[in-house]
Amino acid sequence: MKIASFFAGVGGIDKGFEMAGFETVYANEIDEYASKTFKSNFDSELEVADIANVSEHNIPEFDMLVAGFPCQAFSVAGYRKGFADERGNVFFELLRIIAERNPSIVFLENVKNLVGHDGGNTFNVILEALSLYGYTVKHQVLNACEYGNVPQNRERIYIVGFRDEKMAEKFYFPNPTQLSTKLEDVINFDVEQDEKYYYRPEKCAFYDKLEESITGSHTIYQWRRQYVRENKSNVCPTLTANMGTGGHNVPLIYTPFGIRKLTPRECFNIQGFPKDFVLPELSNTRLYKQAGNSVVVPVIHRIAENIKLAINQTNSLVLQGSKN
Image 1 (cartoon, one colour):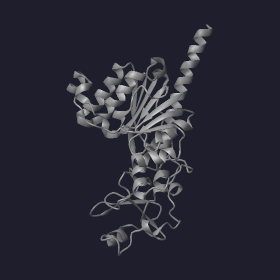
Image 2 (cartoon, one colour):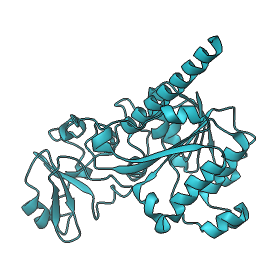
Image 3 (cartoon, helix red, strand yellow):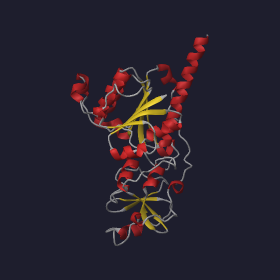
Image 4 (tube, helix red, strand yellow):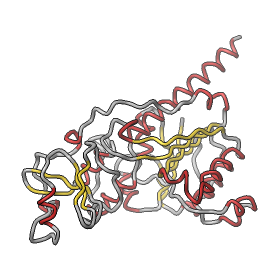
């Protein structure tokens, strides 16, 4: 099936679906730096623009719409009055394209808090709108360390809508899987990195507190404004877009060469991107932001495999029915 991807970022969702045999034929992303990373890894048509300026008529033919869209508030009352009251909200821009192009499947990813956002109104409107446009919807919150074999505590809500009700019946979210990937598989604890990643007494006002608390190897720590917290679950806390700032909540590790933050490549590793995923010549701050804003690729891959299975099973039933 052919995919149109919105809020594509660096292409994490696209990479997961590509690994399952799908093809992204069109992508849209507003950020020029994320777009540069996307273009370094995909040959798909990429439109660098605000989704509000994307014409639903100019997108190539596609079967599935995917989007990791930002979460914005909107009123239930406004929605029921019509789209005019909700212009500028990105979900309704997606809905505009869905309404015009009628993709067979819609796949959406968002932060876990979307479920309770605005007292649950936001999530309910999304489900109601997809149902109104003919989709049977399934959704589930999945944690990367439980469903992606990735050592990161990262919970996200995944929403899958099918126009074909029988296909929806065949689709199930993946079962939990054992976490066998260790932190040392994705982080180079024993390899010296560029000096800019290290915390030193002369550069860090709270270095004495780091030195006192960060003593164990092959685990993750965080500076929590006033104290150091060790993550004893042997996974990395949720990566965020501000990991390059050196401030609050940045993951830190103890190495033979000193205390340091993660490198951008290690952050992409912890998001489950393939080792050959290209990181272009951009500032580290941009790359940290891109990694933190992206998705856990193996979780997407597993969901995509189950979507493919539901498609194949449904098509097989149709074929059997036509023979009978």
